[in-house]
Length: 365
Image 1 (cartoon, rainbow, N blue to C red):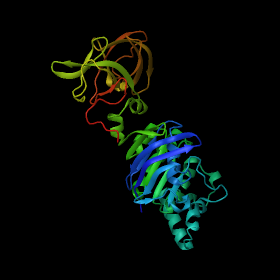
Image 2 (image 1 turned 30 degrees about the vertical axis):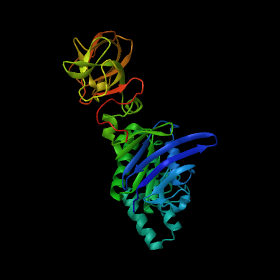
Image 3 (image 1 turned 90 degrees about the vertical axis):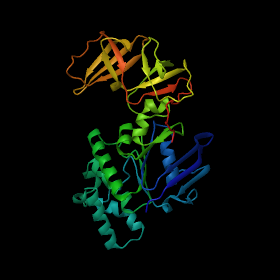
């Protein structure tokens, strides 16, 4: 049975150092919830607090309505998948997966039935009698996943489980993990620093920085409507360009230093003209034009097969990344002058100083 997880005013200290100052988050029953952030942001610390491996100095952690702060890890009914697999090298696949069931004192016939079932689901049933040293990294990670799920945990916790795999295996395994989670509907908290991985598998994502949550939302919400500059620049490729707010023919917008203007209708009403702001521009939102827009010169071009990537130095010396997928045009040579117009279905403008979004409807969580 899956549970919801509610974390209220959680504080974690290591000696005099406060790693998590005051954190609140709720994970819905059965959802795939990802903690995403750079190394040292507190995401693994928080995961270990949920598991019971780290203490909680203040606040509460609840599974449904039950506070679990003082419940030892082995009594929380969690499944855990680690970065280094943590499987027993001397045991066969079947014995590794059966380990938790044996600890639960299940009947031998029940253990055999459940092990066979889960090994078929994770697609390594034909390797049930093989030891881990004779298996690939992806196969070993499937053992770890099967062992965590077979005990029917209330919560599945996964700490950077794919970081030791090569790129092709990571893509394969993240699909397998999501398919299996969908099948069992286990409440899952997943830790990663890989934004593409998070976007691909999550129901919701929490972006963490310095022990605090910057934004919680679906992958689409996080990418299209970032709450602040940190989220905007952490998720996806991005350029932040300075401008000022302005009114143009009765409509709200922004004006760049060189006079180029954009209509941005969905800024909040409280923003006055002349306010210093930053505009988020994804590389594919630039268009190479003959005139108008932002003037610059190409300083580097890279042919990527389906796209051409440019680095363009703007009139103010800022370097921006531009991605063009029109392969009918020739590659623009280095040092050539270009004009960049900006076209986006969802403009994102941020206050220069607070770095928070000035767009209507953008939520932190």
